[in-house]
Image (tube, rainbow, N blue to C red; front, side, top):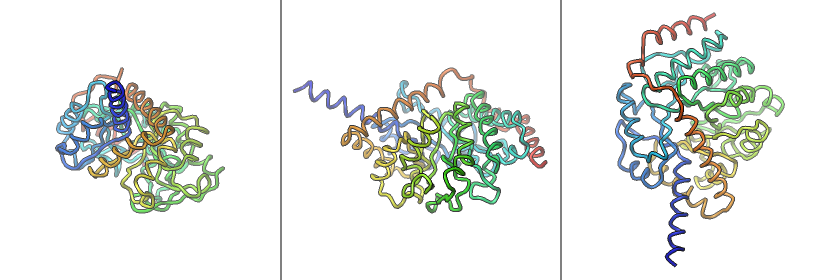
Length: 365
């Protein structure tokens, strides 16, 4: 009887561990909330995301990342992440990096690698491990994505996506390419609604998938799904919840075997699906890790529901095991055998500022 109870406890402990490893957690402010510390003790997360609201200056970001790492066991070091795309999306102050459209306009792959390397050296100095970049969407200037994308030309966007990933990896930062299978032609913003892309399948495959193929060939650290519906593949569900898109296109057609991350689970694009349904569909579709940036209550609920999903379904239990293995493989690739972290004084270094100015000048044509 005692042996059975111990076995059940061990199984529950592993379900909690696997559930925690399917979460990237954010929080408000520059100190770690007590409630988040409690959640971390229940199920150590895959990692954390810092936003501008969490960062006062580079040295403070480095110390906060050190404190976050200290809360997890040595066997599960966190992936500490940030959105540092350049242009209008950069959370770490110092060098004012241009948007990626400037690099696409310059169309110099060496320059793109140099910018990605320098940007990533700054992140490494602040003890980040993972960057939610590059944007691999193919987008016109006027789109929702706009200048966050390298180019409206699929081949040019693909080449610079790969170059960015290579430059970042040389500096010790893993990249997550986004937003699969392509947010560039969406007219709506998934923060506030569910966008729809009405292109037919041949056009989607020719146009939007090219940069993701290049990212996979460049050994990208992860791929983020789009909260966008693509009727050519799935008339009902957005990509984040769609097995036809994630298992069928990304894992099947493109042969991707790495970690699939969600975009923020707090976006309005997913409001039509209750949380338990969102999680069940996403896990069944092959999504590995969920990003939650704000609500502690939502983070707790997601953790508990991910534990229960494993209890209620052998298929979901198997999915959780496979996701756990993918996260562990990413952790090993991202955290081991990487260059020594530079001093935090490198953030905003004169040579970096000069490189940013050069990239803008070259991008003007």
